[in-house]
Length: 160
Image 1 (cartoon, rainbow, N blue to C red):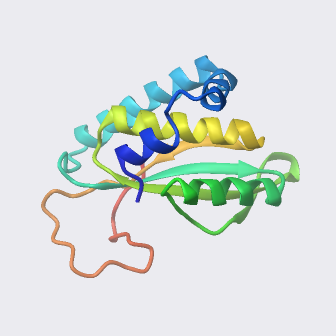
Image 2: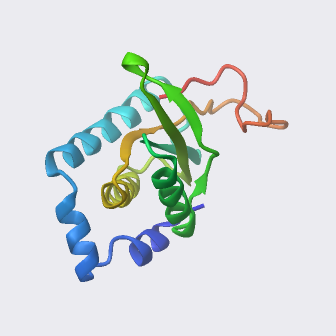
Image 3: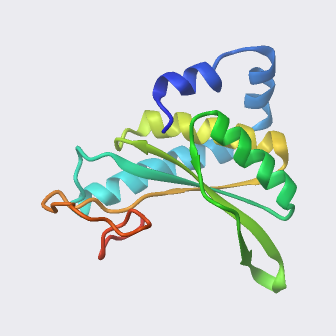
């Protein structure tokens, strides 16, 4: 899983290439993602999710070109993220997109998640794919997790 140190080492240093990456990301879109991060965290905590748990943060990528999505997946993996297999998703008007999730394990820390969002938005912009936000699952503070199903989810969890 990606760590804060890896984010700074691999994606948030201020080399010339990184400065260009920041400039490429739409500032309004980035601010909207930051606001969404705070709303997701607020909703989870209001619903009673465990504030001290580690969460699987699932960032969503999509593209109409499999090769570009694959390049993004490889780059995200090199940055320390876990990446799911690509899946087809049919959207409006019969258009088919290729999608995958880029996953990290994190506390519900807005600044850390913001750093991941910015890093992955820059990657998506650089490769010409879509960054479609992130989500995670409710973590019951009273649950005792022994056996997880093959997706790593317990029954009854809610996705945010």
